[in-house]
Length: 224
Image (cartoon, rainbow, N blue to C red):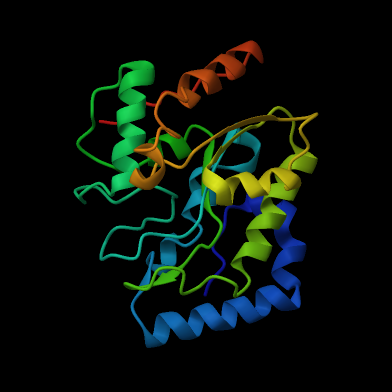
């Protein structure tokens, strides 16, 4: 695995790349990609960081695992490649955007326009084996991404963290609430959304209200 990550992140995470756990993770990922079909493609593993430079970061959305179906994952949590059918969680995200900010339901599910505006769309685990959800969990990725969250918390101010569902909410312990803004809700998956824990959270408009109050550029959430 080539750690092809934007230099703005390398400046803050270089020590992590030298730690034994990360070296073991690299060897694991190299083996998995050489022996199995894995997602996302290797050049997109660090897409979340390459689309959202550290200095531009304003919002963090945390997912759990990449999509494990063919051509879905593109290195951004909840996002899929252009032309790919939208998974259920992404459908519910777009439905909430329609209610919250009157966004028309988009054709494509590629969320890279969000990332390019300073939204870090980071899964806790950055890789997965085809058709095997969770297959790359507990191999070191979570240690790395927890350190990313701590780094953001310690070295940035006034970042908006959107924590959706029980897994993401557990990351709150890594975030300094005196420096940052934390919005929580249920997960957009149908299991949670259909029980009333997702729809109506208005996280997208609330995020922009916070950014506006800080004299920061708001996020254009509209996807075409």
